[in-house]
Length: 193
Ligand code: GLN
Image (tube, rainbow, N blue to C red; front, side, top):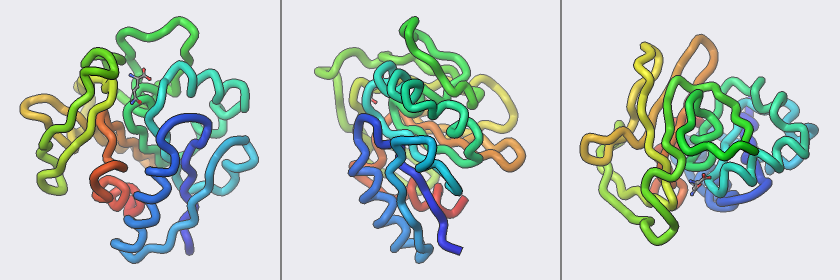
């Protein structure tokens, strides 16, 4: 059966994720139907959803306005990059009072740990899928909260920059950087889930 994967399309790097998903689907030879999610109706029958980067306060406000929190919470496979990773974390340092979170992953995240837009950078990362180049844009920092079902997927030096949590049927991936800009490896992993 063809998998249906949504990309939350309210703000941020939506097209890059759609392209990465389509390229990844070709590489793993698993057909994927990609759905741009703007309303609760778009969520019907999704096998997974990607929460892109952007600005987490803005994305959370737009999600509230579109009543998307409860349907997204029900999706069993979620991958969040950057702002999306912030939405997934159970603990957020530097959170804005107006922000709401999904709070699904046992990670702690420091929202603007690397500073402003000007401090954005590209770095070589050691990942489960080999060495890749990672782009960090106003990136958050991830700390795993020590629960048994979260493990690191990528490192920048000693720092964890991507984490994967499996609890029962639920699979979550949080990435501090933007894999959609340089690799399809994480999208392939997500499709295989
Ligand atoms: N730090 C930003 C935030 O709080 C996220 C940046 C990004 O997604 N590139 O939303």
